[in-house]
Picture: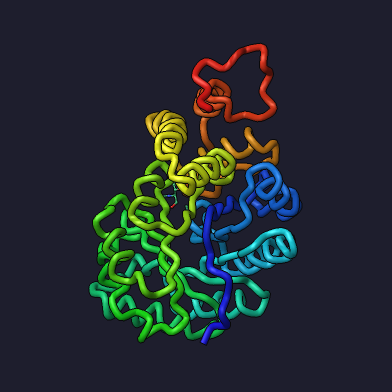
Length: 320
Ligand SMILES: CC(=O)N[C@H](C=O)[C@@H](O)[C@H](O)[C@H](O)CO
Ligand SMILES: CC(=O)C(=O)O
């Protein structure tokens, strides 16, 4: 059994993997990155080597080193470090799960294998179970992201009876817009102390209403502070302020989505906002264009999302 652990809640930043211009991992900025999240964004949990971290584009040895660096640099600063250990090969996934346990991570998460795919719930659970068993003392999270894995088995089905199969099962990271499925996961498992972590940042408020206990996302790297204001407003039942915050966040995300938004663009935005160089993404992703970065910067300024902005421009549509 997993040792009883503090529940993962609040915002969890899906970390970017910083790279050099030559495409190597830039370990040297990770310490700075931890401080930035904690001090500037008020974000104390991270999700490493996931979608945003290009986890599936890294070698196994790189994934191990990245996980180690975040755990080391996050010690006594972060509340929880969850490592994504999903892979196409069960063996690799188990190796990464065991490694996460050895280095003292706080949890592991796994996506559905997405090349040769599990075609039903039972097969998917069997796969997850084998990975979880490689780290029997670590909280286990299922990472549901059907648009990217192509595995469309509903999360509600996966959760049905999962604790009997996977004793370390601790929660769900739900990256999909199907709020019926998400809400049913919450409704059917209320008595179990699971974490229900929502992963569509622009719709987080709707998920909070449905019972989300936290959120994992890419935008919490640079909009963590803003999103925390929304969580606080929701907490004190000030729904109109919470909605204003969500609309404000949506204005930015909607703007960049229309320009073409993904991991490459997240790297460019984070470089801009934090001042920490995230570098280019790795192939098959391509660096965000200069045009994208310029437009995103102008939008961030007008929404007052850039803390070091020059005030002389005035804020055209800053939301409180
Ligand atoms: C597909 C993807 O990367 N989703 C991220 C995490 O689950 C989100 O944080 C999005 O980046 C965000 O919601 C913006 O669409
Ligand atoms: C967004 C997210 O959770 C990920 O990058 O995996």
